[in-house]
Length: 273
Image 1 (cartoon, rainbow, N blue to C red):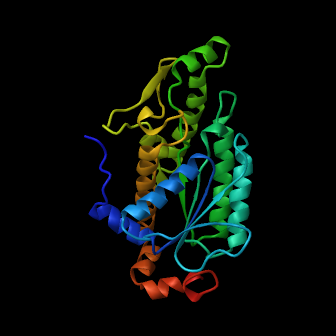
Image 2 (image 1 turned 30 degrees about the horizontal axis):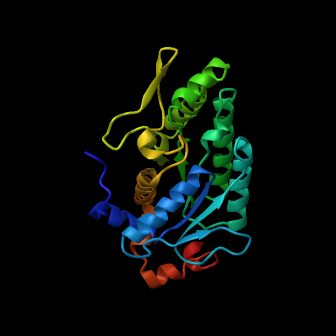
Image 3 (image 1 turned 90 degrees about the vertical axis):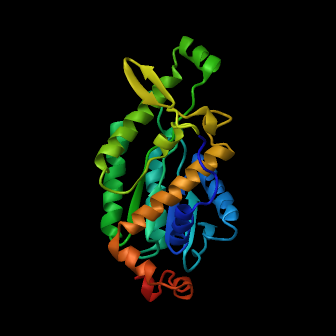
């Protein structure tokens, strides 16, 4: 059975909850696909259930909003950590209730050091959590690439096996899952590697099994197609809603906030402090 593409009661509830929340999503590349999926999802729900806005050079919109911004440079993951921190600092204390940062598959190649990148991520998130204790940080597994077929075979002949790139992504994701198992995780890699019929997309290398992007969700082997965008967007909304519900102070505040009160809860308002 394929994954349900309708707006069920649980998804509607999650959309309503996230729609009352201030979220910041720092991303690149596949993140843009996910944002497009959120826009499509909002239209499917029959109205602006979440307010999407790009974080530009001006002030962020007041009230509940899903802020998104491209951060850093692909292939240079530490620039993304810097840019994510800079954006949060520019927004200021109390400006967002939930913050999410996503790396790209291009940040992890065969010669990458996943343990070093992960250590840098953990250190930066700890700094930000200390600086912004009221913000919930949702951790994201890095996206994957699909099998490359003949193209991948040619690359392997000339000494660059694309499977080795996916191994590095899997290694990073394993570190993240272990470290943040008891906190909020948006497991994008697990979603990408599970086809629409539930079949897992895996490959073998050196006797071990690794996840790869299912061809159900991509037309170019890396970015998400319409089905992939919907899958990823729905799961992100679910992860954000779970993060809110598992944070008692935040969930209670949002549960007791009317739409009019929420509209006035932007940075600088009493509810944002």
